[in-house]
Length: 255
Image (cartoon, rainbow, N blue to C red; front, side, top):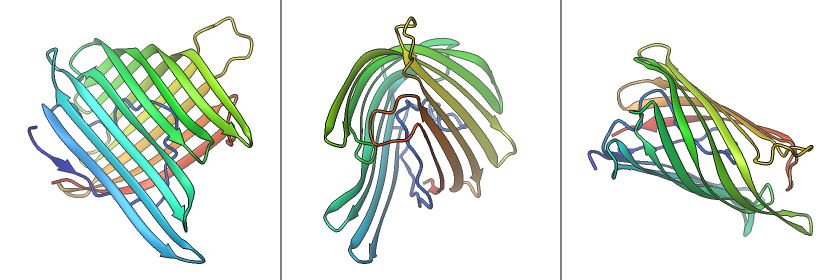
């Protein structure tokens, strides 16, 4: 590990963290080092009719290994809200991928992911697959990447007293662009689109996710991030709407 990075994040609003695979966070290349740790967390307690506790935790590990400029990126996130002894919110995911460190024009990006979201009625979601990642444009201060791939998903949903299982092979596509607006401000824009692998189906189970983040470097140690995300699911299976959105503010301390 070349250096350790610790982020302390104060969440003012909650992001959606939808069922989509993250590719990059911002224009400052996260994969330029041989390896690093990234940690963020937040906890609060509020005494009302019942004790309310909010917990948010994120851990990321990236390490170069194997092929030249290839390595593992592993991520874990948990968000929970407890009122008394009742879980109001319980969601998170664990993801691991083996990918190029932004050095190849064309590269493979295999991954596995496990996810759950009690508020949505998503009991569990396990998927594995691989993307083919293409560098469309990359220069100092801006870049654009696209990807297309296949993954197999196994989802278990709860809707009322009904339990639903969805197993299928799906197509995953994404487009990511990032630009450094000034020396202190950069912006990243990501769009993900998923569909069944059977293109002959009349009623497509489509999912669309859009993520936007603006990062302002206050000093070399402190960064302020503003983000928003929108999620659309044509055929929601759990206790969710077709359209959902979220937005957030975070303060980062880099050591």
